[in-house]
Structure formats: structure tokens, C-alpha cells
Length: 371
Image 1 (cartoon, rainbow, N blue to C red):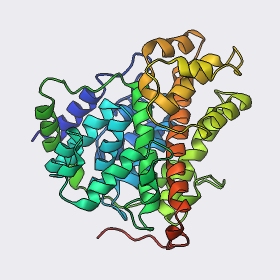
Image 2: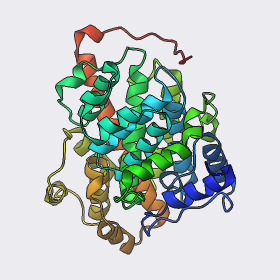
Image 3: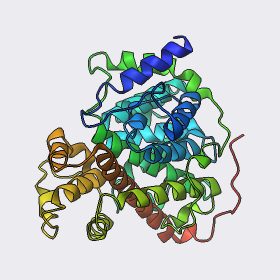
Image 4: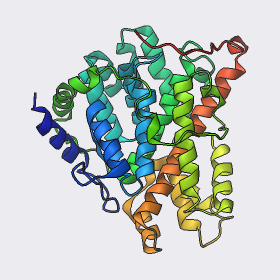
């Protein structure tokens, strides 16, 4: 295995190889203030990567993503952290985010779950020996379609549900923002399995860390606002993390979009039913007819990031940059839209779960941690 300092340097550089030209990541040596605090904690508790550093132009955005990611997915809770990452790999494949899929498959290999990785790579969940985990991967893959039958009977206990849904938001966001800021995976297609195993071996130490819950919360102010993520309330750590993140995003987007544009985007995504988008982007043009010319390019980006981020390309981003969009405005638009899309998926999974009468009034109020 590589020496620790060299490993940090290598992963930092490799993970940013496919960064789009519009984003300029700040490294740990250049960082100060909130950026430095986030990068130091991510280096200690995980590893610095391109998805995190792509938010450098707005430190609060980086803090929000890291805060929620650490507290919901990297901390062992009702679900073990390694399993949440594997679920993220399954989601990344459906959401067509090769960058995230490769990173999360490597982390799952680092947890010595090679059979599970083979099943995900081969798109054959029957290879997973643990039937419950097989069902969990199937539920994750079904989560991106609003009316999928599997969503009514998720393979989680009531206590696990807020964490499972929070995990969908974290990795759904990560998929979307990575598609927006990064142009594919840095892992070569030729020899992919070899490189994933190599990265997995180097990430074993990160995977084995047992993190203390709550240490990232103070990166952002406590939220005093009500959110529409009521399903999170039985788990205070999940609820607090999402509330702080959501509050910050809502504050930042007001510098970028008008109230009218935000309302239109929210309503559009609310009525979205998921599933793969048509190959052509003509569908999004049809949804822009009520948008003013002044904000049409911004709304186009927002809808694509929320609903089909894999259809984003440099040309679309260049159009808003040519209109005078700064890097800070660009990453804010992408981050808010990515969160909106991911949150919508989690919410419809919750609605499907709640619609099953067997799940009424089953939550317990106190969270417990995996021993």
C-alpha cells in the first residue's frame, strides 16, 4: 500500500482528472477558512476527491455535501457504512454516473465484498449470497421509478428507513453533481477490473474507519426551518444533517434564480415520474415553453441536472457561462438542482412505503448505532 501522504496526493489528483474546464478545485495547501476545515476532515475521515473539490467556488456548498455525506453515509448507524456505499454503487449505475460507480465499487471492494461487486458489475443480483442485501440492491435500483412496485415493500426495518432514504439523497445528489462537474470516470475502460481492485486495496483503511457521529454538523448553522423531509425526523442525525444542507442550498440559490424560475422548476420536478430520459434532449425543450428567454438557459440546466444529469455536456454549460454566469453561480445552480432531484426520489420512495398499511405508526423515536 502507498504511504499515507503519497496516497492522499495520488487520489486527489486522479479523482480530478476529468473535471470540466468550468470548475477550478482548490487543494488543501491553497485552502483556508471553511474550505480548509472541510478538506481536512474529508482527508481524515474519507479521502479528498473531485466531487467534493468541484464545489470550491462556494465553500458552504462543499460543507453541505460533506456534512450530509459523512453523517448519513460514512457513519455506521442502523445500516453499516460499507453497505450504504454499496447501495450508492447500485444507484450510480442506474443514474448513469460512471465516476461515482467506479469510486463506490472500489470502496465496496475495500470492504472485502468482491461477490457483491461482481453482482453489480454483471447486473446479476442473484450472485449476492445475502438475500436481504440482494433485495436492498434491487430496491435501490427500483427507487428511480416513482411507481415501481418494489418501493411499497422496502427491505428495511422502520428504524432503518430514514437512513436508507437519506442515503438515496446523498448518493443521488453525488451522481447528479458529478455528472455536472466531471466528464466521466478517470478509471481506464481497458483494465477496469484491475484498477478498481487496486483502488479498493488502497482504500481499505478508509473503509475500515469507525467514525464518531455528529462531528461535521458544526460546519453549517443549525436549521430552524421546517423541511418537507418529514420521514427523516425519527433519526435526529439524518434529519439535522439534511436540514442544515437544505437550508444552505435554499439560501444560495436565491442569488442565482428568480422566485418564478424556482417555483417552475420545483413544480416540474414534482410531477416527474423518473425512469430513463429519451435519448434526445428534445423532452427538456418541450418543458421550457413557459420560461422567460432571460432564464431559459438556466432552467434548462436545472431540469437536466435534476432529472437526467447524464445528458449534460460542455456545450450546455458553455451557453450559461457565455451569458455571464460565474463559477460560483454555476455550481450553486447545479447543487440546488441535484439536491432537488435526489430529494424528489427519496420522497416518492417514502410515499410508496407509507401507502402500505403495514408500515403505519411503526417508527421508534430514538436512533441506535450499529455495534
